[in-house]
Length: 50
Image (tube, rainbow, N blue to C red):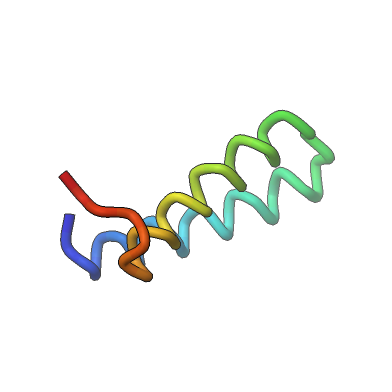
């Protein structure tokens, strides 16, 4: 996946996370945080892409 797609995914995840926090949905907040950390790891080069 190219960098521009990862950045777009990151932005959407951040927006979804804000909505989940406002709705106080704990499991969704946790899952979105895990996915966001993975995407940010890929953007920083810490996680190799297949």
